[in-house]
Each structure stands twice: as C-alpha cells, then as structure tokens.
Image (tube, rainbow, N blue to C red; front, side):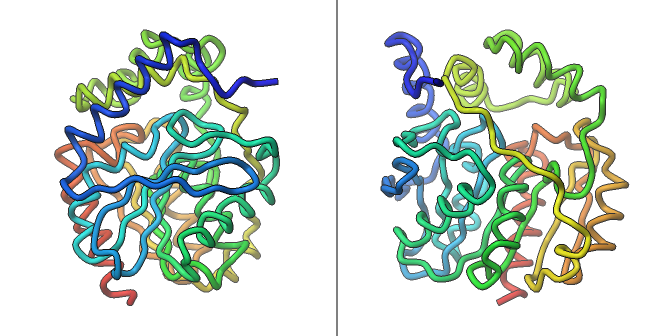
Length: 292
C-alpha cells in the first residue's frame, strides 16, 4: 500500500517549498479551500471575482496546483480560477480511504469537486497529464464543460517519444531531487525555471504518491462527437511527443478545436515559462472570451 505521508523531514521541506511558491508567486487575494470527497480531500488555490465564471486548472504529474501562478492573475480578471492539487499526487490534497484507481474514479472525483464548488458547468484547462484528465472528463460529462483548454496534453492524440521515456525512467524508478532536476534540465533545454517552484518540484520527488491512473487515448469516434469548444496549445520544442503529429490529430479529430503551437518552449517549461506565459495567457483569455 502506498503511504500518503512522507517522513517528518521530507514533509516539512515539501510543505515549506509549497507555501513559498503560494506566498511569493501567487497574486494577492488568492484563497485556499479544501473540498471533501469520497476519494479524499481536494485542495484548491483560487483567485478572481467570486461571481465570475469558473475555470478549473489541472496540473501535470508532480507539478502541483502552484504551477499555474503565471496564469492566476491574468485569467482571474474574467474568471474565478480554481487550481487543483490532484488527489494521490504531490500537493496539499489528502487521499481518502477510497483510492482513485480507474478513469471512472477520476471522473467521479472531478464530479465531486465541481459539486463541492456548487458549479454546474465550468471552463476546464489541463497541462500534460492534467490535459488528459480534462479531455477524459469532457468526454464523460460534456454538459459540465463549457470550454476546454489543453496545454501540451499527453496521451490524448499521440504517444510519448521513446527518448522521453528513456530519459524519464531514472526519475520515475528512483525519484530524487537530483534526478528530477537533471530530467527537467534535459527536457527544457536548460530553460530558466523559477527557483522557488523548482525547489518545490524537486521536493516533490520524495512525496509518496499513488500510481497515476492512465488509459488508452480516446477513440477517434469519441473525439469527433465532442461538442465542446476547445483550444489546444502545444509546446513547439516539446520532447514529450511529436508536436506536428499531435497538432494534425487534434485538428482532424476535434470538431471545435483551435490548435496553436507556441514556438521555442518545451513541454515541462509550460505553463510557467516567463517568455511564453504571456502568449499562453493571451491565447487562453481570448479563446474563453470568444467562446462565451
């Protein structure tokens, strides 16, 4: 059984790094809340007018909700932004007695989060693994997703590059801060990542987590039937997958999708990479405004 706690020392280091990012990088007025579900308690970091349309942000694996700090202020101008710590992943969410083991469990968990917020329908945005969750949920509960934003999503339109898997294996098999840093340095091409967030990402290497729930790519038939406006933002320098193949598949299969390739940025540099965040925010805000 996977523990949901770290050692006292590791826990303290991770939590201190988490609080540093929230305090130093998230905008003033950010609030925190915990939503109980049968799968455990889900932590949300929220910003924006409380009466504005909701926007749920799902992070990539190991990134925590804090990774959206570069989006919170800008997208919080027009939306009530809720960045979520995934249950079973590093973060402030706490797994419950009922584990998330299947795609149906993931969908039911997100149903419960929206119910806890009192939200019937929301814009939904996810990066990497969070993009896969967002797309799966949109297929599960189309009526609850008003707009869909996928930021370099993995497992949705193409598989991983073999070289990416090979470079990630040491970090996945024996996680450590040094291996996390080495992998991120390789994938991002040495891009300058925020030091506070990088400390948190490295501290997450020691955080016990459940095996991520994954599944097959959605079928072409299911994607073609998806009646939700979608924006697919791809990292032009991503080493995770073949960006041209992903873009072609998204354009071919999603009937209401706009696909944009953001040049010069890698998969793991999104969504916080300084030189790219402004363009990502602009594209996302424009899409959400036009879709309403």
